[in-house]
Structures are given as C-alpha cells and as structure tokens.
Amino acid sequence: MDKSFIRLIEQSVTRNWDLPAFSDYKGDTLKYSDVARKIDKIHTIFEKTGIREGDKIALIGRNSSTWAVSFLAIVTYGAVVVPILPDFKPDNVHHIVNHSDSVALFTGELIWENLDESKMRQVKCIISLSTFDILHENTPFSVNEIRQNVDSLFEKKYPNGFTSSNINYFHDTNPDGLCVINYTSGTTGFSKGVMLPYRSLWSNMVFANEVIKLNPGDCVVSILPLAHTYGAAFEFLFEVTKGCHIHFLTRNPSPKIILEAFNDIKPRVVISVPLIIEKIYKNNIVKAIERPSLKLLLKVPIVDRRIKKAIRDKLSAVFGNNFIEVIIGGAAFNPEVEEFLRNIGFRFTVGYGMTECGPIITYEAWNKTRLYSSGKAVVNMQVAIDSPDPENVVGEILVKGENVMLGYYKNPEATEQTFNEDGWLRTGDLGLLDKNGYLYIKGRSKNMILDSSGQNIYPEEIEAVINNFPYVQESLVIEQKGKLTALIFPDFDAIDKDGYRIDDLERIMKKNRLEINKVLPAYSQVAKVELYPEEFQKTPKRSIKRYLYQG
Image (cartoon, rainbow, N blue to C red; front, side, top):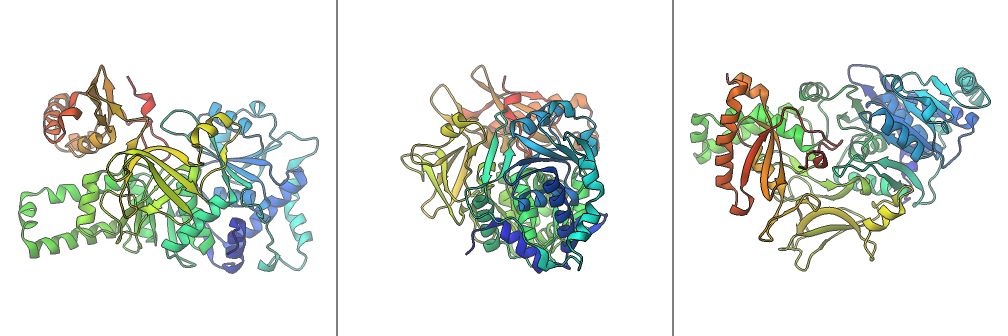
C-alpha cells in the first residue's frame, strides 16, 4: 500500500468531488470541489509570497470549515502546519509562532484583536480565517495585492474550468518528513512542540480505516478541538479521507449544543472525552435509576433486561441513534459509569493515545473490549510495560511504531529523556498488560503518590470514587503533609435544584468524605475535603492541569 498521507487526501477530494465536505453547524456547506478551489487559491498566495515546501505555518482559531480548509491547504502544499489552541493566551501564541519558526499565520479575527504582530517579526503575512483576507504583511511587496488578484490568477490558470483532474498535491515521498508541529498543553505545565511525520498521520488513517467503517456522505459532528491530535485525526482528517460530511460546532461545545447537534445530524460515529459522556450519564440516566421502584425492578431478571434495553435506547437516542460506536479517549473514564454502560450493552469503547503518537496507541471495538481496559495495541504499534511482571506489577507504559513522533522541536534534551536506550517512547503513564494484550491504565507516573509505608496510591482511582457521590461535579486528590486532601468543585446546579443552600455544602461534603472512606483501602483514606469555587483548569483533552493545584 502507498504509504502517503497526502495522497489519501488527494484521492478523496478527487473521488468525492460533488459530495458535501464541511458545514459550520446551522451555517453554509462546502462541497469537496469547493474545498479544492479554496486550497488552490491559498496555494497561489503561498507561492507568490515566497513560502516554500517545509516552511512552518501557524493556525489558530475555533473549529470551522475555514480552519479545516486552511489545515488542508498547508499540508497539501508541503508546508508544516502548526495548530495552536484558541484558548492559549496571546503571549503563548507569540512564543509558539516564534519558537516554531512560522513564516505565516492563519487566525480568527477575535483572536487577532489581542495579538501583537510586532512580537512575531519573522511572519510574512497574517491571514484571516473568516475571509482569507490579509490582516498584516511584512514583505517588500504587497501580499494584499496578491490576495486581491487571486481569483483572476485562478481563472488564468484554469481557462477551461477547474475539475478533479487538476488536483495534484505535494507528495510526501519521505515518510519521516515533518508534517505537523503540535504544541501540547499538558498536565505537567510545559508546552513542547511534538514533531509528527507523515507516516504518523498515515498510520493513524490506516488504523481508523480498519476499525471505523465510514462511507462517503456519512455525517460526523466535530466537537473536540481540531488543534489537538485526537480531534484532528478522528473527527476531521480520517473523515476527509473517506469523503464524509463534517459538521463543525463553531462555538464552545456545551452539552446542550452537542446534544442538539447529535439530534439534528445523527452522526455515524461519535468521538468524545470522558467528561462529556459522564455529564450526559449524570443528567440523563442517574436520576431515573436511583428511584426505589426502579432499583427493585432491576433485580427481577426478565424486567431487568427490558429496563436495560429501555435505558440503552434512550441513551442511544441522545447521540442521534445512528452511530456505529462511541469512542472515548483523552483522559481516565469513571469506572462506575463504564461498568453501567457496559452492563446495559451501550455501544462504546475506550481507547488510549497521546499527542506524541498522533494520537492512537490502543483500541478495541465495543463488542470485543474488556471492562476497564483501553484495548490492544493498534496496527503498526507495539506496547510494553516497564515491569518485571507486566500482568501483575504496575509499570510505565512504553510504545514503539509508525505512529511515534520524531521528537520535540528544537528540544533535543526532552527528546532524549522521552526515549529509552532501545528506542521505546516513555509515555509517563502507568499500567498493566494482560496475557491477551489488553492494556489497563492505572494513572500518570508523575501523579502517583508514595505513602510512608511504600504503598503506591493512584489519585485518579480515588477521584473516580469521589465523583460518583452526590453534589460533586469534579474532584482532585493531592498530598498535603503526608495525608490525602480532596479538592472538590461542587455541582451547584444539583444543589440549587434540590433546594440546598451553599451553607449546607460543608455538611454534605463531610458526610460524603465518611462514606467515601468506607469504600477506599486504609492506605488511600481521604483526610480532608476542601471546596473549590470554580471548575479546575484543563488541557484540550479535558484532563485537569494538576500542577496548578499541588500544595
């Protein structure tokens, strides 16, 4: 098989010329032919501005059709795309643009208002994501004039009309050639530029093609940030290679907007993070199954099956009732929620990945996976545990294969520390690997707490228990003076709904702590609960930035 990521895009654009490609939710739609025209015109601007293959081009903005067009225009030209999360502060954006050596920048206009072009002196031009107009230029000639003439240049280039036969993109003949620099915003607090080669993106597409059976014209809702590899790979790039119709939620995806979009669009596959699924579970299922009458009926086998089917049907309807499966990744999934969803036969699976692998590492289909597992190593990847007994003794998860990054941009020290002497990538995650190859993640090695008796404590496991208790929105377990403290962000909506006052919170959480400790081992007892007034700051994958809260 031709190991070209760019050719997969080229073939799909040609093959699906008249099909819808991108829609901004409740907005305009672009066909694949429209996308191709826009790409060609952007290539003309690049060429006339002196941008060359291998140059870096930064891209920042909310998910949208124009964001997707810009990404494809950059990579099909042979330039290196530098996606930046729209939530980054201006100083971070300036730093990333400069550190990555970007010579051009695509930006949403609201973001542009807060940027300072004088702090990005090597950038030749800054281009609007909404109109592709030139917002700023730093060249001896007028890039704006090139932009104004691009339509006439396009017509001269194609006097007989622009057809699918005119598509001829840059070909990535070197699998190790650099395609993307993705700046992580991880839980450790340091942003590093992950260098992803063409082979990583190609291999992620090969994996998805084997396990997610999408057809041209199938609909997908893009809710995850496209500047992160998880959303980019499996809500955008793979769907492009299959000729799917992608609907972008162009504003912050609240649960209400997400569910409305699912109902309208009825996506063929749902890609999500645990936080969204857990909120849907809490809001749509928990209250119903806690009724005493239903709890009693769930113990009667025949009635139990019918009730489970009814709950499964209701939950499936929430996601549009047309999906092959719901794929969950990006952070730890609450074990109680996972067990319940598995018990009712809901079509979902939990995968595992990281930016450094573009992102996929392990996966298994919903009807083959194991409870609490993140699946098996995917095609072109190997997984190992740095442990004398990988089945029983927790160790660091190591990975190797086509998906793995080249290293961190201009950071050889961090790159060297991330790979061991045998070339395995150290993930920083801890886990077990059973005899059948199923991976079970225990937590982050940096998060693990070692108590005075030498016992390993995984805060994520304690948090999963705490989060199931009444009036807890989310929690974070930290060590203070040798004891465990739970920081809790309360569920204020539930408190208001049930008629409690804020003054009642302390009493409720004190009672919760006693109940929590009844189900926790002696070595992981929570000594203190502290109420936190606002939602914890998170990474794009919705993992809490723990380093901000360490006492």
